[in-house]
Figure 1 (tube, rainbow, N blue to C red):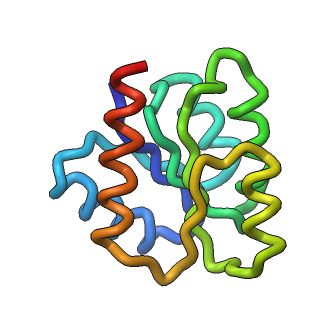
Figure 2 (cartoon, rainbow, N blue to C red; figure 1 turned 90 degrees about the vertical axis):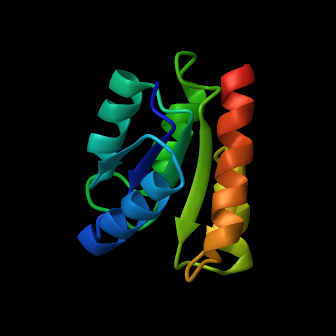
Length: 125
């Protein structure tokens, strides 16, 4: 089973996050936009989706909302990882069902610790 799906429209961010997470022992896949993310969620059933907000086709809020409203994927953990750091952005993320919200630039160790916790919870569910 896939641990983490990294969703970001910036190739450098996808590659960097994939590299870091794989070095930490996570199984990782990537998606470049919201539609691709939803397809991969249904296909690969990741434990955690690491999701940017500002993306083409479907933004991260819509993707999160669709993941959480679908009974097949509702238990998938969603972490919003975005440059949008305003209180309203954070509130919106939690309104659509996000499990966590991290602003870019992010603390790598903190992100790894959070993902370890969420993947472990997903494994015991």
